[in-house]
Amino acid sequence: MNLQDHTTERFLNQHKTIKSYIDDLPPEAIYSRLIADRFSIHETIAYLTRYHHVFMYRLKSIIKEINPFFEVYKPDYDPEFGFSCAKSTGSLLHEMYRLREEICTLLEKADDECASRIGTHAVLGRMTISQWTEFFLLHESTQLFKIFKLAGSFWSMKTEQHSNVIHLPRLTNYLDELAV
Image (cartoon, rainbow, N blue to C red; front, side, top):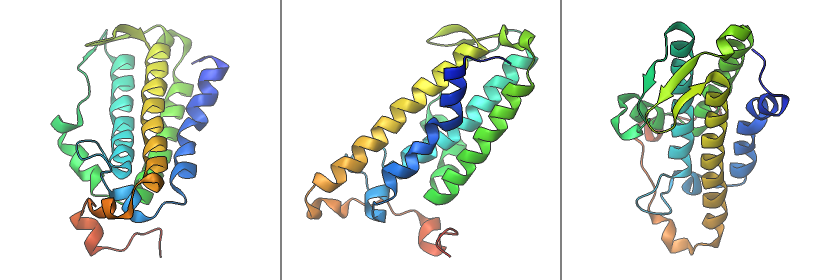
């Protein structure tokens, strides 16, 4: 499928900026909810990773079905989201990279006829696959900005405010596979 060159470039690389945002952060910065009712950096990465699965499902549905309808994705109502949060940040990033490659392959294999196929979003209405891809990138960039802001705000907070660390049962019992 022929996406605009700038869209393809963003789709291939936009997600890779996460690593540069979090590389110098200690674990408490990644797992802490710096704002009590907002996701931590880790939870935001889990959300983005889970949203890759949702987007792939939507693309496949648009390719196979006539104008499928999709509700707004809400992680609170997604039983799989909790499993994503229980993974390490490193494994989530690996999963996101792998899923991104799978979605790229799916988009590349789709013929030009697929480009005109439509899926309807509950809020945004009818969109072609190209528009769905743009929506995905815009949505992702909003989440990336949240990660960027959280990473910066961690260093500006007083150290006694770092006590709101999320304790994930799986992470306390297993070594991070990337740390070995």
